[in-house]
Amino acid sequence: MNQEAHDRATMRIGDRERDSVVALLQEAAEDGRLTMAELDDRLEDALRARTYADLDPLVADLSVEPPSRGPAGPQPVQGPPPPGYARDDPLRLDGGVSSEKRHGEWTVPPFILVNQGVGSVKLDCLLAIPAAQVIEIEVTGGAGSVLLVLPDGWAADTERLSKGLGSKSVKVPRTPAPGKPLLVIRGSLGLGRFKVRPARRLERRRITKKSGRPQLSR
Image 1: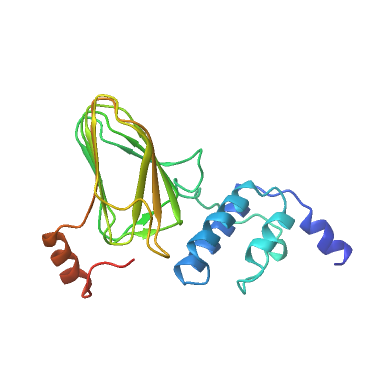
Image 2: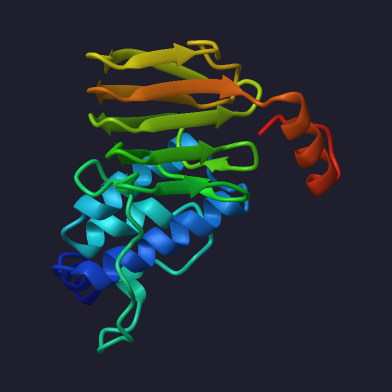
């Protein structure tokens, strides 16, 4: 490495450079060039990076230009990475006094915070793509309800979820099928209700009709 390249690699970076690498890693995972576990590890490293030398190894095997060789001048400002890819910045879902839902084709990030409130929160994962092999969901107590609908092969561990005066129903395995994600649920239910179940017959038919293939092995 020549002196100029060395000096560039040791330069401090900011959120713009980290966000650029996060976008490259997410695109690589969507293209199948990274596994979900690799994506999870590299996203954490990218968000902790302090210099170009920290970023370069994260994309060295992806046939893209190393961040340290990018333009040195000001670049267009990009938005921050989406919530849910760092433990201190989870995807927040709030039942409040009404309801909140995630359904259809969506990406389930590694970190989710669910606030029951007095409403309802539903996570329909039947067409979802997991962004990690282990997905952590924190539940804060309330009087509402939380429902998770999981595809075949997905699993949920609710041993760390205290039900308090509420109710907890789990109708999926605790151990995932090979290559499928595990949802680790923690927190407290308060007076609320929490349920995890697989797809019902009508849901399977609807998903099969929509996707054009048998349900559901994602």
